[in-house]
Image (cartoon, rainbow, N blue to C red):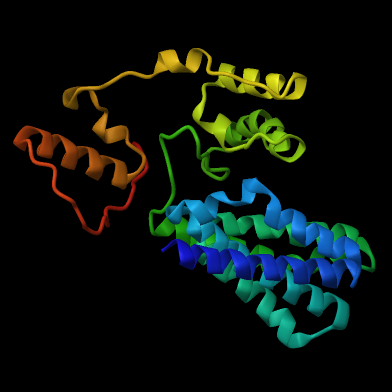
Length: 264
């Protein structure tokens, strides 16, 4: 299973090197940028965490979309003009993280696109159409996340998303400017996140804080079953309590097909 993820990571690294080479030219800068991506430990989580492999797949198709977009805009290739939004759609089908591809296309229109502003804006129209159609289907099929602090939906909860962006942007910068992983703070309290960020900038050191006081063990009757965000969490907990009563802990293999519904 991990070999599979390593193959996806290798393909992504090759694509990223190709993107840098196409945009920066056949220079040592492009090669150095590709090497820095491969060596950056913040990019290893999707490889180590099998359930996060979809991020690699989304990035793979996202980079292909960027390459096709570049070929369309620079060389006026009609096949590339059709392929770019389709590849972007495949990135969205792979993971919600595929939306991040739009940031690269937007940056391309701002920094690399030639011509008047209106022409640059129109170059993003196919991608925006894909996003709108994808979101309509996404909502209609009942996908999404609610009642969980780590993930915030920018469409259904834009105010909370904006607040989360202000809070988390410095933590993401921490991952770029320091050796500390930006993933760790998401599992800490707000106060602990602030200490994490300030401590990282001040001394590069951090330690556990009051967030440890917020954790405790819950009995089966104390768990808010109707507020659990992920079906896999509910299923796992119910299997555990059932096995605990029977004092037998077998190995469970099953498909979890219950779709998360929004809280009333």
